[in-house]
Length: 187
Image 1 (cartoon, rainbow, N blue to C red):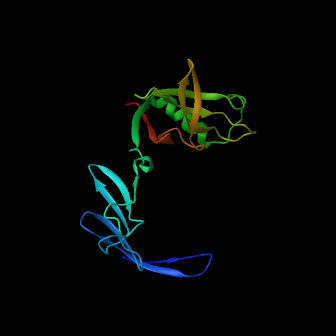
Image 2 (cartoon, helix red, strand yellow):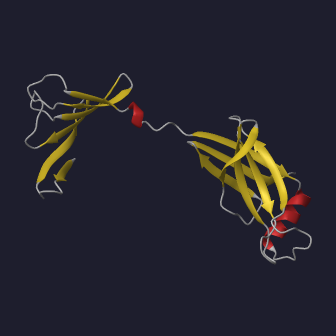
Image 3 (cartoon, one colour):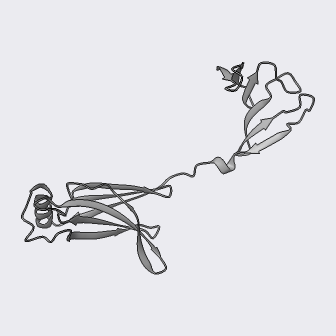
């Protein structure tokens, strides 16, 4: 692959190319070379370590700099999934409350109408909630709230966007971990 580097300060540019050099990805830049006439930069994977090797001195057989990229590695995402089953009669009532503009006399303003928790193996939990309308005759709304225990108390750490249906998936990402709760009708 060929490329062109442009100096924003002077407007000058250098051309180069990237090649798979057998031992790694070699970056060749016109007018620069290592001790053997190859590219002065190589990205190398050796002994399960990704590193950048730089020959800043073309007379040196060994690289002048080795940069270990371990600190740049993105940890593998952990996934937690759970299913919450809810009785059909309760689902029917809550789905209706989420669809229909209603008089708030039977459901208090901002009242938590439904709140069921699902615990995950990492000690966190997600509460699936249906909340009463905040204004006038609006319908109820849903959310998933992720909690973490700290000092013996549960603390909210993430929340889904507001939803319009109890059924379905509630998905949150937090600290390189994915949490999904699917709400289904209990049969």
